[in-house]
Image (tube, rainbow, N blue to C red; front, side, top):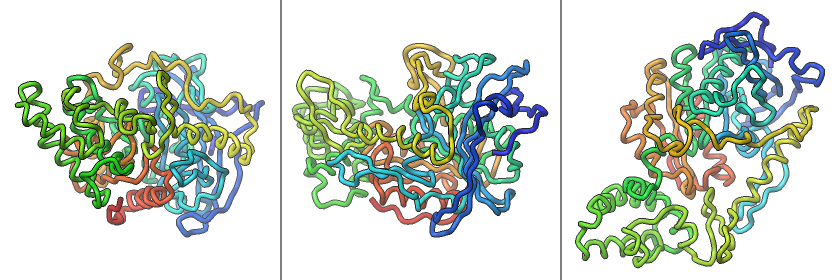
Length: 490
């Protein structure tokens, strides 16, 4: 990464930006290396840089040191070459998952048999999108090697607004440091990172408009779609994923012989129609109708009608994980995975071994890039985030407080007439599900020709399924280049 000039650069939040420069000169870095790879069928010569960017406050004091990893094509036209900034969620986690499982030039292999939750070694990632865009993986404050500095205040970075603003400031700094002002700029956020990306879209629209945002495993409308006891909409929107999971495990007779795309479409239509109307009637729903709805739910989700009748025609995603197969528990992040559910104990997520392999893979990759910082300094997630400030409010409520996150994307559509929003979801994800993603778009006033919705076989990290990795990266290529998207196939 080219060093930022010593003169201050004005950031989006009224901050001044300066280079890390000598901040850790004695400890080494930036770490720069040259490589060649075959990506998207094209040979690409690129430079990998693990480097630092320090954001300096208005008083001239350094507030946070970002460490990012960039992969930049050598010999390309900087003005025409797009840049894709990527980060994961949390709050707040490093970008290692997207980096090492999906988009980096090396990827962690994952067993393709969901009966075996295991990861393998690192291989060349032939599907990464370095053929069409330079990549910058961002580790937010207190994750990876990034740290809040003495001049900064951790509560600011541990808040929805401050977190997003600081990452926006980083984007501005990186772009200016590398002379990429003319480059098309894209942001991809996953999970909680979709809330960050939504806010960034509005923040950057004021000073450095984005060409596109990709919300993967979106949580932007969790306010509306979290399964609180009386929030009937949430049970309607989330029914789609329960149906898909039950169909995958062969527990739902309603879906016998039907393709998964039909399961998803029909379950969403019924859930947001007849089922939602029944939930809205509550205890005023006539008993015969209540029994009919419960029977339909059993056929669609594999959970007994008796359960639904005893629970006001509702089941939470957490309960569904245990109820579908009784003696086993499904993976919350990827419900194709199944593990033991010992009585009286909290079961571990059967997808856990895959997640556990990501940080070691990241550190092994850093070694190949010449990084000499101690592995013990690396954090896959920020510590002590229980006091995260949601919309300026500490304490209970979290992302479920009354706040219109999706409206923060609107300025991005206005700032660039070519701005395109991508939304992607794994159909077996029981954290951020298909139905809320569809519902979010229907409730928006976004121009429909500039919104692309995609669904993938797999869970929260659908790209662990190799056919979905190819679909995911293929969609990113179409999104960045303005090309056509392959037909939807589940």
